[in-house]
Length: 416
Image 1 (tube, one colour):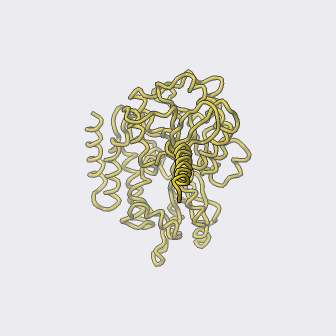
Image 2 (image 1 turned 90 degrees about the vertical axis):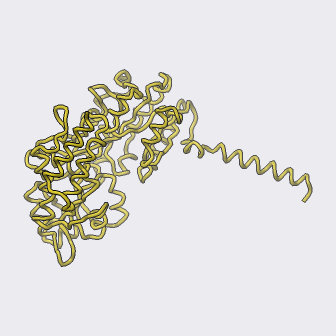
Image 3 (image 1 turned 135 degrees about the vertical axis):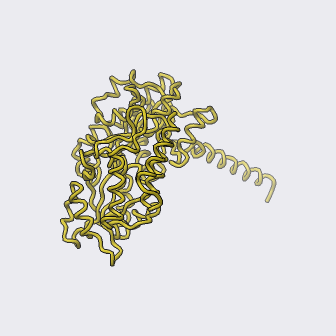
């Protein structure tokens, strides 16, 4: 090959390389479109990611003034990445998605913009469910615009219900019915259980639900309430499912209850709406409904939320584009609903199209009863001793009083 042709080939290769480097993949994937670029970070690295990208792409096509660049950061690395940006070690995006239970920590670090001033022409409080709005506030100040509310959900195996002589379309509504169903659905010879009690995740959703249904709180009057009667009763109820009623196996390891549900060996299951795609892909014949009142006092369900937040230093010009996008999302949220979630915007969850979905209307039915993490900074670290104690009790390693007293002591130390 001549030197002339080598030079031509080299030049062609350089054009190809330069084109590839400018494709947007290095920055996390430009969503296309023209206009003023606004970067959005989100932790949606599962099946929900493509649905958020669908919303962003449609928004960018709908106008040419702004171009939202969606960058997905894996959930496991998300808040580490956010912290790097907060500390100046990484470029901060113009806006990002943040869980409701994380808002207080970042608001107290004074890195989030108070959004009360943007509520008005485009972002309106009346356009969202009041519990969604509540989840986005800290000390009655708005720091986020709600995307969704995701509460604990109740799932059941319809085939196992039918085999046990139960109506496959009617889940239990209260503790008495739940126990009756669980006993009928348990068959020790088949290693089939009415309800498999998880010893780890998602106890962080299940246990607060039981405590609030018992009329209690995990935090009140400036201190943890881990030894209170509602907490003790909730843990005794779960332990009784294993030891007394024998409707659950002991020694369940992480995700063991999910595996058994997928295998048709766990008839009733508590988990979040994020499980929908896994159930659908498995082909299991399942039902979904609001969580029964398993507690002794009232209906309640623990929930978290996703919210759009804006860093404090973002310019007014960028905020104008962000609010335009947020208004679009509030009116065009069906793609997000299709991921299994229930958007907090009324335009979506009150629509006829939304009501035709299988799971999502059941999620929205629980909005009114949703309760969230207490407004305490670093609540996850403070509550860790409680969930460690729950794990030890359910595995038979400690008794209830000992485990909860130790958890209370450790929480008190972390709150000082």
